[in-house]
Image 1 (tube, rainbow, N blue to C red):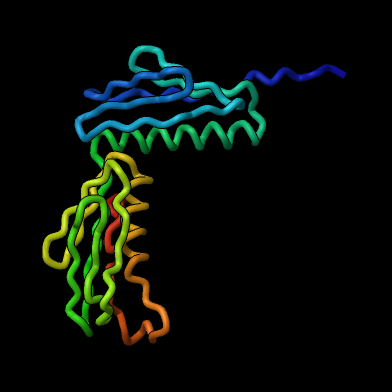
Image 2 (cartoon, rainbow, N blue to C red):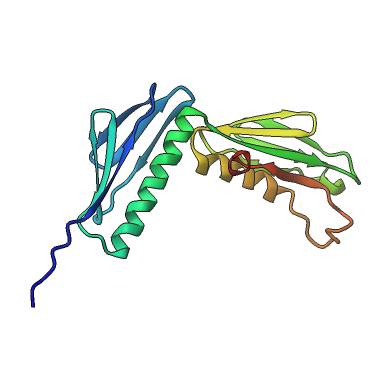
Length: 184
C-alpha cells in the first residue's frame, strides 16, 4: 500500500494600499491610516511569512487540526487589517429612568455616579489604546484593536449590571446598541 503525501495548504492575504506590515519572528505589526496594532502569531502548526505586499499563512498538512488554526490566524489578520484601515466602533446608550445618573471619563476609567441612588460610584476600566467619548446619553468607543474596544464596552456595560431588583422594571444602565459586526 502506497502512502499519500500531505502537501499542506496556504492562504495569501494582500495588504491594502496605505498599510505597512512588519514581521519579526512571530509578531505581526500593522500600521495604517486608522492606527497601529500588533499581535503574536506563534503556533507550531502554521507558518506566517511576508513577501513584499503580501502575507502568506501556510501549514504543512491539510488535516482538520491544521486548517482550523490556519483559518483562525487568517481571521485575526483580517481583523487587524480592518482595524488599521477603518477602526472598530462600539456605541452604548445611557438609560436612567429612576435616578439621574452621571457618567464621565476620569483618566483610564469611566465613572458612573448615582446609579440607582447608590452613594458609591461604579467604575469601569478603559483598556489601553481605546478612545472613549461621552456626549449626552451616548458613549462612543473607538480602537484599532477589536478585542480592546469590545472589552472596554463590556466593562462599561458590566459596571451598571443590576442585582436584587426586577430588571423588567429597573432598566437603568449603559447598554451596547451598536457593534462593529452590526454595520455590515
